[in-house]
Length: 137
Image 1 (cartoon, helix red, strand yellow):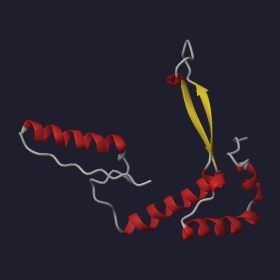
Image 2 (image 1 turned 90 degrees about the vertical axis):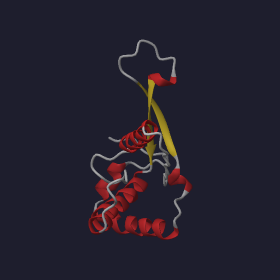
Image 3 (image 1 turned 120 degrees about the horizontal axis):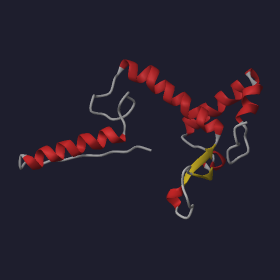
């Protein structure tokens, strides 16, 4: 059984509730999106530190892997929004190829690699490089 989030909800309870729980969850999701507000209970997380395999001693924070247990209901709302963005918005209005979000093979690593390559090229050519970064949370 999956561990509960910080507010004690077990995903298995929601799965077993089936169709009974769908309408209330949809109402909650719509309220969250309409109001732009997520309750403090859903924003919290319980963090467990799991020892990394193969370590001889466990004396440094790097010897552990943090696992965050967050609200299963909030994760459900996030997935609904993500699916809507991918299926509805991006299918009709794709992002520019240089945007490093919502694309196969795009990540923070590819964004940094692109930036470093541009800067290195400009340094080599004695040129100027101007970068703008935006991270929306």
